Image (cartoon, rainbow, N blue to C red; front, top):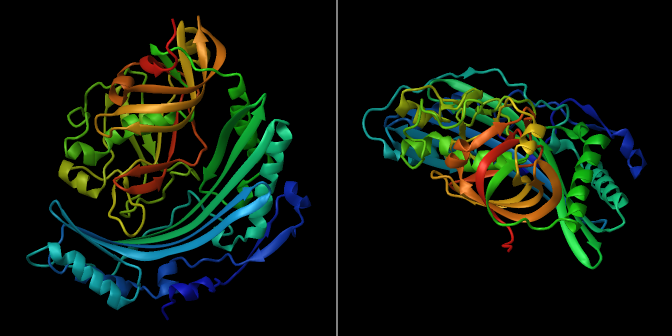
Length: 513
C-alpha cells in the first residue's frame, strides 16, 4: 500500500531504541531515557511509499522512450526541524517535510527535467513524459531490474532525528544559553538556534544502479551580545555535522560557547588596521571560506566547460607553489559536506584538484565528465528533487605545508591575520572577491601585537593562490555550518585550510597619516 505524506507523519517503523539524555543535562527536568522508534527499512521508498523496482523500471522506460544518453530518478524524503531560544524563551519552533521525485533525461547537451511531489505511478509517468519531450528518435532499453548498491557508512545513526522530540533538544539550548551568560558579566543577550534534518534519498539510473542513502544533519548556533562602557559588541559560533543526538557533549558545546564569547569580548579592545597593500595571514580553519569561494568554484567543471573559469585551459599547468595541494573529499566521516554517494548515484570520493602546485583535475558531474572523456568524480549535487544536479564541492581543503604558524608570523614585518568572517562577495569564474573579516590580529615585526576587527580584504582567487608563499602544518576543517550557494541551489559543505601566508592583498582598514 502506498503511504501518503500526511499518513507518514503518524507512521512508526518497527523496532525501537533507547535515546539517553547526556549526563551533563540530567538536571534539566527531563527523563533520562526515552524509547523511540528507530528501525528504518533498507529502502524506505519501496517500503513506505510502494515504489518498488517494477514501478521504478516502468517510469524509467517512459522517461527514456524518446531516446537518452543518460537518465535518472531522484527520490527524496526530508524531515527538518528548527528551534530558536531567545532571552530564555522559545521564540520559534518549526517542522517540515519535503517529499518527491525528480526525473532527468540527458540527450547530448540538452537536459529534460520534471519533478512531482506525488509518488503514485500515474503522477510519475506524467512527469516522465514531460521530461522526455526534449528527445527525438528511437528509445533506449531501460533496465527492467536494478542493482541495489550497498549503503554507505560515513554517517550512520542509532536514532533518526525524526524521532528525537523537542523535549530532548530544548535542554541543549538552555545549557548553551546559561553557559554563555556565566562566562562574562558583560553579556546581556544570548540567542541559540537549533536545526536538524533527516533526509533519505533513492537514485535509480539508466545503467541499472539503485542507490539509497540516509543523510542526517544537525547544527547549533549561539549569538552573544555584550555591553561594556556604553558600547555593544556581538559575536557568534556554531557547530554542525552529519551526527546524532549523542554528539552534543558538554565539552563540545562549551568549546563552541567559549569561542563565541571570546570573539565578542575581544572586539572591545580591537580596532581597524591601517589600509593598504600588505601581507595577509589566513588563519587555519575558517579561512577555508576563501579557498572554497574564490578558488574552489573556479575548479568546478561546468564553469570550465563553458570557458567562464580562469582555469579552463590550465590542466597540467602550475597554479601555485609546489607546497600547495588542494583537495575535495566527500568521504570524511560525519562531516557536514560528507556524502556516501553523490546525487547522481556515483560513489563519492577524493579529488585532488591541485597537487604540488599543478592543476590536476576539475570536479565533474556525469555531463561534464562525458564531454571531457573522463569518469565522474562523484561531484554531482542538487539542493533537492526539484533541481537537476551540477558539479559542486563537498569537503574542500588545503593540505599541510612545510612551515609552522610561528614561522609564518615571524616572516611578516607588517600585516594582518584574518580569523573569522561574516560575509563576502565572489565573482565565480574570474575569482574576484571581497570578504568582511570580523576578527583578526595585527602583525608587526614578526609578532602579533593587537586585535583588529571590521576589515575588508579584496583580491582575486587565482592570483591569491599564486601569491601563497608559506603554508603551515596545522590544517583543519572548520566545524561551522557552512552552506554553499550556486545557480540558485544551496547545499551543505565543509571547508578548511592550514595557516597560510599570502604575500600581498588589499586591506580595507583605516587611512592614516
